[in-house]
Image (tube, rainbow, N blue to C red; front, side, top):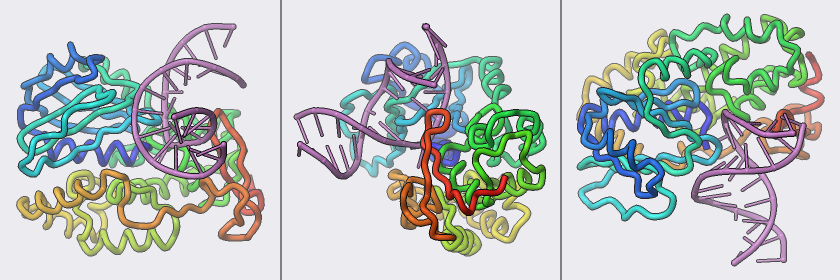
Length: 320
DNA sequence: TCGCCATGTCCAC
DNA sequence: TGGACCTGGCGAT
């Protein structure tokens, strides 16, 4: 179940598994049969993510996919054996000699031309995973709005890639009242929230898991610094954030040894499809309604905001 | 086996 | 703002 980090990790996997080679495309379910026929046998040039949108580029058209709440697109190595027979509601299968990727339950799966792709991107706010993202663009869309920050963080035209878990967690990390209006939010608070997302989302990509607890973030960054996280070779090598830090050197070295990278990637791909990067699933507030706040012991509250369950601590996050 | 819920979005009212 | 839609997993029955 995807927020932006999941889609960026997926783009990396698709690129490594299928990039630069012809791909077999089919729609066992039939709902995408005509379009699959148009890309069948074409070279998959590149896969990239913007927020929660996935773009898979072919010479003449771009495959646009949005997984929605329940979609999945696992990439699996074949390891010499034939792919498992297609069954159930399988919208799209991508296949080559080494990998198979099965798309199920997307809310968008379509072939677009360049202007259509540009239109989707233009409607999105800055993505904290994009090294060139401009946080001020998001601030301009926040500061004049009389909507709560809890709603604004989920609004993809304000900020691209953040979903319900990250919004709950990041607001708690900064002790910010989720009901603070955009017009009331301090600029300094926004700067801290953005910087935190720029730190946290790449860890989510690297570990295919949302990590927000201090000890887990610390451990994740330690593993990154030790060069023990193969996932970042694809997504992070061009990240300004990490090029500006120690781990980048390690990443560049690992990336230079492509054979080792391939082996490591295969291992990672085998393991992390469940979105489990290996650390236990633990949050400050998300899905902890009624449990004691890990900071102050007060009960975590929940309330539906814009159709989604918001979780927060009424004491820690009193301040607007 | 059933019903509900989910890291999402869109549309009709 | 409520419902519809896409599918899988899990707890209750």
